[in-house]
Amino acid sequence: MKKLARTVPGLCFLTILLWPAHAYAVPVPWSDCGSSSDILQVQQADASIWPPVRGQQITLTTKGTVSQTIAAMSGSFTLSYIRQSAPPLHLFSTSWNAIPVGPIPAGPFTLTKTFWVPPFLPAGPYTAQLEEYTPSQQRIFCIDVTVPFK
Image (cartoon, rainbow, N blue to C red; front, side, top):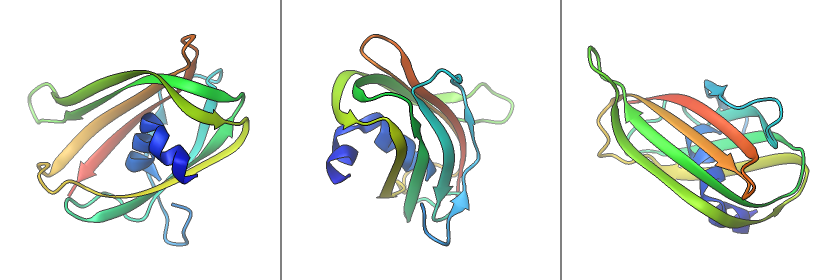
């Protein structure tokens, strides 16, 4: 599992934004921007604290079901700051191509990640979208999250 977390930047970031399986887990509000034919059907996202607090640690856990083995993925991530009376300010956008990931076998999927929330982010609401594809462009998943950093 440790190797998987190091080799799958998209899934790791999704986990960073979303999920823990501890008794103190707090559901994270997210929406599926994918479809029922996506390879990974995310079913649950929990956090040790929600909303995240700048400069503090958070543990996130994602759970879902993988319909077929995933051997490599490409993806994109966008983070935007939501401003009142103005369009969102796009702070960060990146993409990656055909990163080998494992493979991740078909079946139940759980990934837990603990990280520090950057203290330099301005407090307020952010939107994030993470989308992953196989090398043949079949969508693995797509997630939208609004994160109200404190």
